[in-house]
Length: 454
Image (tube, rainbow, N blue to C red; front, side, top):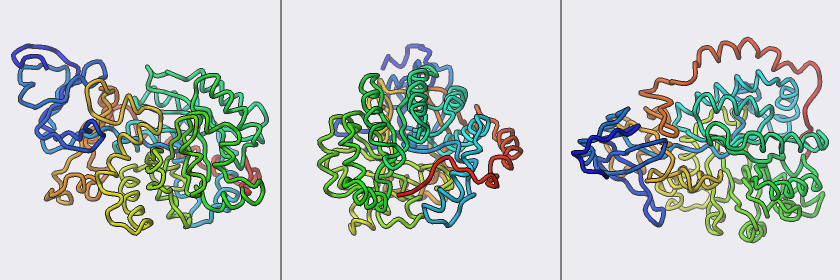
């Protein structure tokens, strides 16, 4: 830091807070009575509040009583599906897809996608999410929303083999056009839907395109045990073995869900030629009554990062990554039969650095440290449900809620201050979406965009 007596203007100064930090071995710690100095969208320093007394700032936030955390990352969602929140309830997976979701999605327009994305981004900003990985249709509309509202995102245009070569070509075209958009806040991926809706030939072609253009791949695979069992019966391979056979594992790949990953899949993931990560959204697995969950402990053991996710609000009902963090800890304890796994500090690590690594931004976001982008949330721990604090990590994971996020910052820009959204008009978006819902949810036509048959 410069001497405290020097008058230097920085873009943003946050003082008086407790800062969640990572040491050289990526362990979670907390710096008390700290200050964060931000210049040009980057954290310049994490220091003591006292050492910034002589520092002037274009914007100053007094964050006493609050914890500064890296912004949360939603590692797999379908943001526009908030428009279908609560539409398909208490159904098994096959009926959920074939009876409701895929018939409704045959009605989608770019306007539906844009409005859904706006509402979703508002929800995520209010919940402390600063970055999300989205995998959906009409993604130019989502990219425009991200650019306008100030969030960070990894975006991919989803495709099925039933769309013919044009689907894959649209996915590539989107990824190349939008890569680096919104001042670098948008990164892109190729987005085949899943091994059960995309042929081996198309997956192999996607892997070739990913390597040729330096793009990651984001897809669903081994979502549940039924998919794995069916894949073994029909093809003699698990979905993970399909990814290896087609070359997808030789690219940088983000696998959504993975609750059907088997023990004999682990060596393939460990030996993959590309960077492999898995996104876990435990609320949806509980809701669908899937018998297994993402094998977080086994994946961590082979060095595969597991990021936290919500999936779309049509299945999860919300985009609350804070809830995903708490549920991941609780479900893992139950699954492993071990109360010492996953600890609160481990859950915070998944929510921050591991999630950043999962979306390919492990060197850019995920911690509050000099040189990192200033994606920061301030969490108010003065409420009765967070007092007293004996273990700050446990308070954050198991007592605090997404509604305790007071301020959300991306690239040094304040997107929400004291719970007031600054970049999205929720009332206007919700009103326009309500007007368009009848046309969206109509299923009388008998069409569906795809068949769920696993």
